[in-house]
Amino acid sequence: MYNLLIIEDDFIYSHFILNSIGKEIQNVRIYNVVSTGKEAINIIREGKVDIIIMNFELPGMSGQDIIDFISKNNMNEYKLSIIIHTNRTNILKDIMKNEYIFGYFSKANCIDFLLTEIKNLVKEKQNQKSIETIEYKIKNELKKLKLNFSYVGTKYLYECICECYYRNIIYDINLNKDIYPIISKKYNKRIDSIKSNISKAITLMYYENEEKYLSNYFGYDILSRPKTKDIITKILFNIKI
Image 1 (tube, rainbow, N blue to C red):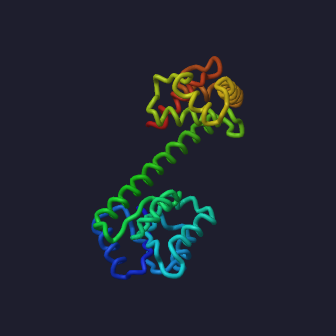
Image 2: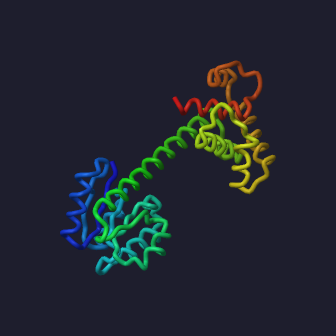
Image 3: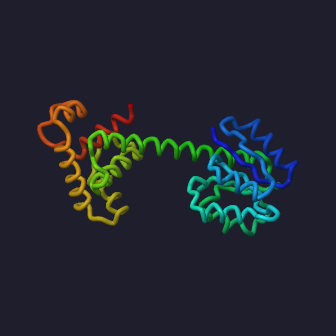
C-alpha cells in the first residue's frame, strides 16, 4: 500500500481527485489532503508519503518552492514520486526534467488521465521495490560466503550477478562476452582488472570458509576455490527459489 498526499487549494477539485482515486485504485491510501505549501512541507518532513499530487500554482509557497525544499534536503525517497497539476503548458518542458517529477495533468484532462499516471507511478515503485529485494538477496548470499564488500572484487562480483539476473542469464553465462564489458564500462576499468579483482576476492573467501561449509553451499566437494561462474550460477539459483 502506498501513501498519497494531495496538495490542492481548490477544495472541490481536491475532493473530486480523492473520491476518484478511492474508487479506482486499490493499492493507494490517501494519507492526507492539504491546501497550502506550509502544511505540505510539515507532512513531507515526516517521510511517510510515497506519492505526491500537487498543484504547481499554489498561493504563497508554490509547488516549485516545495520541490526546491525536497531537493535542498536531498529527500531521495521522493525521486520520480510527484505528479503536478498545472495548466501552464509553457513550463512543462523544463519542469519534467526535474528528477522528482514523474508526470503532470491539468483540469483540461479527464480524470482518467490522472488515474493512469498514478497507476504507472505505482507500477514503477513496485518494480523498484522488486529490484531492491533482489539486490538485497544477492548481497546476503555474498555475505553468507564471507565475501567482504570492503574489497573492490566483491563489488564487481555483485555487479556481475545483478547483470546476469536482469538479463535472465543463469546457466549459460558468458562473462567475457556479455557481462564483463558492461562492468568495465560502468567503472571505467579494464576487463583484466575486473577479473583479477574478482579472483582475489574469491581466493580470500575460499580461505575464510571451512571446506565443509563450502561443500554444503555448492552441493559438491570443494577441492579448490570455486570459479566465478560457479558462484554466480549458485547465487542466482538460490535467489530464484
